[in-house]
Amino acid sequence: MANQAKPDGAVPQAEGPAGAVAEQADMDTASSADIDELERRQLLEHWRRCEQRVMRAWNAWQAADRRDDGLRYRAFMNTLAEEERAAAEVERRAVSSAG
Image 1 (tube, one colour):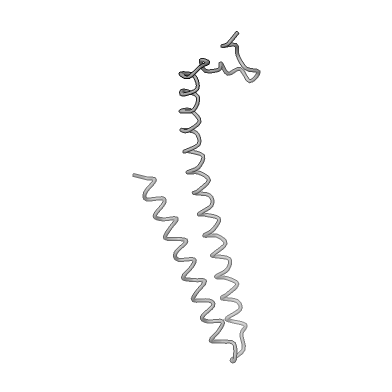
Image 2: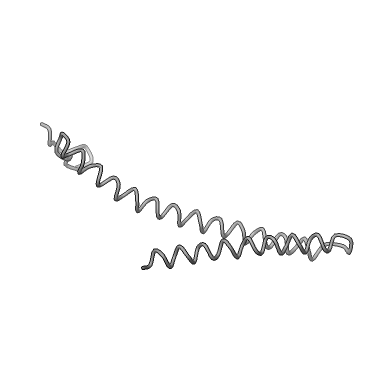
């Protein structure tokens, strides 16, 4: 009865230490791929949020009156630098995962 099919049709690994090691190895492999995909998505989402902040800062700078112009310009440049760092991280991750 130890190796009966589960309700989803999968046959369980052997019971005992050998089965536990094989099952853990399968989980580690899947987890690594899942973690890589999650990290990639998080990087892309962060980059997108940075892009949105750049557009808001740009619009604020363009709408600023003379007394706020310098402050809004610096805010725009700071958000632009942050977006460039986020883009570089996405690119670095893509290159490192490609080979």
